[in-house]
Amino acid sequence: MSGLALLCSGQGAQHPKMFDVLATEPAAAPVLDAVSARLGIDVRDLGSAIEPARLFDNAVAQQLMVGHALAAHAALQARGIEAMIHAGYSVGELASHAVAGRISVETALDLAAERARCMDAARDAASAPQGMTGVIGLQRAQGEALAKASGAEIAIINGPAHLVFGGTLDALDRLEAQAPSMGARHIRRLDVRIASHTRWIATAAGCFAARLAETRWVYSSAPVLAGIDGRAVQPGDDTVQALSAQLSQALDWERCMQAVLEYGPTRLLELGPGTALTKIAAEVAPSVAARAVDEFRTYDGVASWAMRP
Image (cartoon, rainbow, N blue to C red):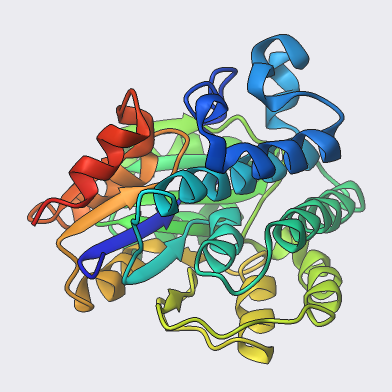
């Protein structure tokens, strides 16, 4: 599909029914089997197989998100759906390389587990508890001033006046108290216990880079874009640098989306679960049709939408 861009979601939208539709897709079965084997549960019946709170543990969540993207892509590939360009949000960037065919399903799941391990180790070695807070209503310059005043750090730039901050819980408390006076319209502490994409987990980048460097990357004709700056990443050392750097550097998802749009896609499809990237796309690119697989009841429906002119 020359006009389709595939976007792989980051953590946060995991839910007990996230694999229900995929469970009946024959093409998705090998991926679901691989994720299930690694986690020691049957992801086809995730609601019964695991406590809801565990869905948000890094070691579980990152493999679930990568597995969902790969299973969804397998179901679409079986219907002849291919993309002109790929991008992914946080751990979704790792998934996007696998969706583009640069690494295997097994390798992608192995790397997801190692990514989570490196991040958790960096967090556990820190001197204070960490977290993240989403803020809507502040421009980037205002966000930088707020970060400096509170001791937090911008972790993600989602779009115009849509920022996510990371830092210690004390710093986030100060940030949330100060943000309204600067014009913030919406402030929400996220359900995470790690300051992803900030200096607080800087050691995770080197840890993950060492594992990435052992990986064999295959060339793909469809570009994969880096979340930190939107550039098209080349297989090999460039990929190692991009995927490891984003652990402790801010994601510029707005810039990445603008780079996606420069390729001229007519449709943006989020491989999910959830609709977070679809909603951001509506902010950044309201003229381009955007949907998420979670919005459909069947993959026949997803394919039918994706193949429209």
